[in-house]
Image (cartoon, rainbow, N blue to C red):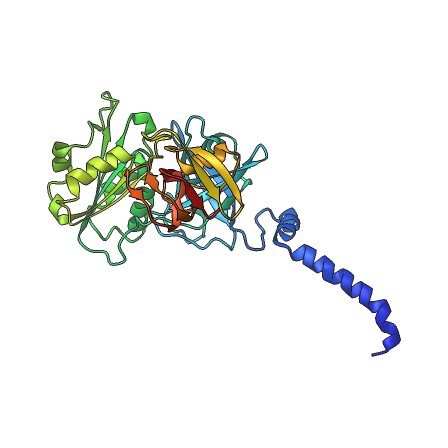
Length: 367
Ligand code: FES
């Protein structure tokens, strides 16, 4: 190489190198790529809304087309969804309501919670073409790898959503296992998927559905009442031969567990209730955030996630119910109380779920 030429070429090389570094920075790449295609990204799972369909008086289903970074799911799992609303990123967890599809599209069914920013946005504002950010699928309540025996699905309210994905996954396979579904809702207008479920029951001898309402005694095509021993024996006289899956609010799952866990072949459950804001303990404690070198004073009985947000911090979060693990962080010292179970933990832990734990003493967290 001619040494005299080097000084003229080097600045240009530097320029291209710097330009390349800037363009390949994930945020910069995503910014420019999204100008060409709204779901192109270097490494982020994104999905475009393809369609929005009402399911009931307060629930809708969104059909989404994910990009190539989405890693898939098993029927029964959930995922975190994020959207920009008025300049703020809001994340919540939703259940996937369809079985894995050949075209790669996924569906979530969302109940519009009064005051719920993301659920209201998804049900009433978001439109086809809008792009959402996806988290990885999570959740343990999936169907066994080896299908055997008979199954009983007990669903209440939004608990029908992951059950629907599992039922559709079985329907795709010709319903190889006997499944009995008992589905509770408060009123007829809140029911989702009922026509599809009844049509499936009409053509599949292996599938049965019973719909039960708790507050709408006028609906002639449904049963009425809360979960109890007599209803359960009427719907599943062969309970001792069935594997039970229960999903719904905390109280419902607790009742199902008390009635069925001992008698069934196996019992799997997932509860969808956020923890109470405050537990019985009063006063305040000192919260040391070791990684950011901050010390805060927080109420003793409040969820740590809520307390941190009230102090102006934005820890990562998703379901806010102790399911998705998004908010988990290390606890180096101090005692915490689980807001669902009341269990007290004194030892250091590597993954403390901030949304369902409160401080019992001064704490040191890896935040
Ligand atoms: S936000 Fe999902 S476990 Fe805490």
